[in-house]
Image (cartoon, rainbow, N blue to C red; front, side, top):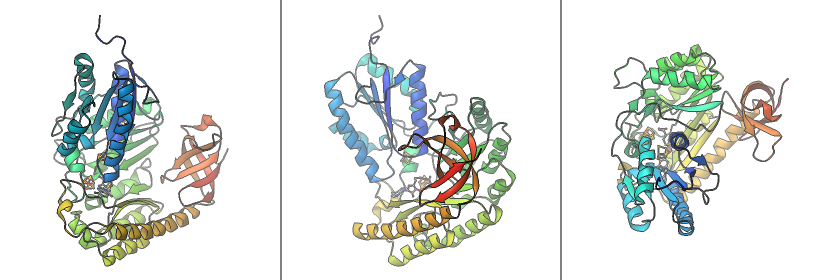
Length: 446
Ligand code: SAH
Ligand code: SF4
Ligand code: F3S
């Protein structure tokens, strides 16, 4: 008889961090389903409890250790639960040391480069009933053909590349995800074609810097070429991508917005700071003027484009004058939306050693001023949508009201309107009646 025939074959995955991690969790879930596991919404009941971690800022680390604390109680009640931890935090030796020392009851630790090994590692834990730690320093060959349990039937993430070569001085990602590796375009086109055949209408191409897709590879296809290839996939309706680094956003890609009808009129273009001096110390390789020129070209080529960004407040050495440059840039660009972050020291990054850390109180005060300005602009931009009829991909019903549907415009704006659940997964015309700071409201047209 098999040793573990009576085991609880259900799993729960809790995911932190970016779309890359969310998609890794979809792959983990897909692999578990292939070996007969089913999803369990309650981590206290699951046979395998996985935490897929993010390390980009300190809060993420703190939340992880908080959740481990909760799982400790579960492990005490049900010692046969398998507690597995993976993701970006596991690529850092100091985290592994802490886990081994303070959380010896964690059963399985693996990293970002070997998620395809997960079923085998899990089997080792179950058969030996011993702890397994397996972290790869670097990414090996890209593994194709892994299953994925997708979150939505009508939209999907598609990885086009892994890793990052940019080493922005504040950022941990190049250390946790290794060097850039691009998937072969045929693999990507095949995956998208299969997704479309299964009902997917919208894809989001994922990479830490999609603009360097194809660099150093043996195929002659760059990111813009890839967009043209995917634009030809019959039945696909929307193409999005994350994330585009301003330093190598090409004119060819800007032109693709004009030529490819499926490419959504939206770009997430993280600026990080409006001060050229700070950008230099962040190792971003562009100036405020370079960024503004890109925005000008984008707006000229695609007048309806919506632009979002990421901004870090309080990078070491940021003065009030530098911060003023950020506010100035925000005013000039008029972002539709933005993610704002307080600078967070990451162990092992160059900026960790920078001496002029900005006091917390100053960071918070600047952060609040920036968010107020960004919100004012978002509200104005969304108000300007009132009266327009926009196609919305319906994603589900609102969290607070089941009769209210929610979806996204091509420009990525969350739109709420009354409707029946049969519209979920469809692209429908919605007349915008009200534009607020974070959402649009409207009425579906017959
Ligand atoms: N590869 C993407 C995003 C990576 S992380 C890019 O280059 O845009 C997402 C965002 O987290 C970054 O854009 C940055 O704004 C923020 N971030 C990264 N490291 C940070 C840190 N140490 N402190 C605060 N914010 C950080
Ligand atoms: Fe981090 Fe910079 Fe790479 Fe983005 S481009 S993942 S911010 S190092
Ligand atoms: Fe976090 Fe890793 Fe993504 S550090 S932001 S999960 S690449």
